[in-house]
Length: 326
Ligand code: SAM
Ligand code: SF4
Image 1 (cartoon, rainbow, N blue to C red):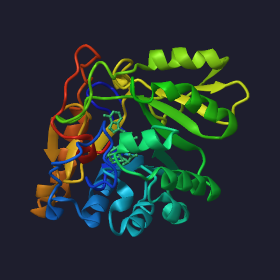
Image 2 (cartoon, rainbow, N blue to C red; image 1 turned 180 degrees about the vertical axis):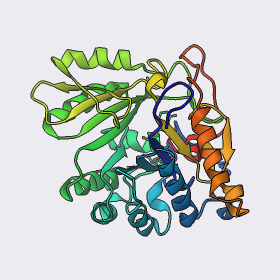
Image 3 (cartoon, rainbow, N blue to C red; image 1 turned 120 degrees about the horizontal axis):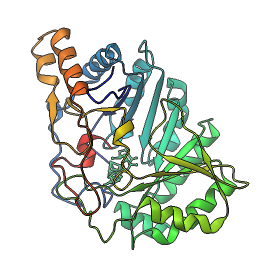
Image 4 (cartoon, rainbow, N blue to C red; image 1 turned 90 degrees about the vertical axis):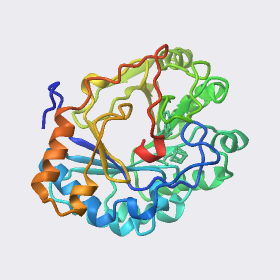
């Protein structure tokens, strides 16, 4: 389905929970987090219902996110059912990797096509500082296991932050020479009122690319219609790829194909816009599929044209990243 700005909206990011076993500095505050009450969170049945209606409205690809999707009880059987949804072409997962080692094989069996894993440092101590938890080894074991059971490509998401992990940009880029990973550098975004974003820690994809060019020639890689917003490159002789996601500086709103469903059942057209529609209440009040379809279609039609921000004009949206679904 096309929105009012002629973009084809075919990709749903589905937040299955706002809970998480890490507390990344760019995503959640250390303390004082108000988690959603359990009965406010969509049940798996409700999620499957909304996904089926989204498919009727043109969604072809779903990414599970959160919070940390793997901490929600019963996630595997939900994924199994989700993967049987007629009309869905691709179901992928973004995870912090902490629980991946024991779940990778089942995730593959259930039908997950791709996995993105957050990994912001190659140094154990720094990883603990960024995530405020000590799970560095578990995450790497999870990454290894995901590779072993056949996930390919494995994408590693690195939120780039000046003064935090900018000294590791080249190490991450070099990793693609030895491993078939797709390392994706993501500009830190000002999401959530208690987010640690400041212009001092902001590192643009232009600066990152400038650093990486010192390693040798970079071959650009083309993108397909269901692909995401990364500018992609391969270093000469590399097994993997480098991706740059300039969420703030080089914003990709013109080609954004995303719709989001929060864990508490609100549909959003844009990560940064606080405009959202409640789809859970009409479903729980048995208002019927036509009413829910109207909400989905209205959210798609009125998807904001762009987020209207740049590094000098940031805007913190009210909800935090873990509750919207990153
Ligand atoms: N817990 C899972 C994880 O960390 O991969 C999934 C949810 S997390 C919110 C999804 C993605 O959003 C992660 O790759 C994370 O690094 C990214 N993210 C979270 N907060 C961000 C921020 N302020 N700026 C940029 N990326 C962010
Ligand atoms: Fe948890 Fe992912 Fe947010 Fe980190 S980025 S706190 S792992 S939801």
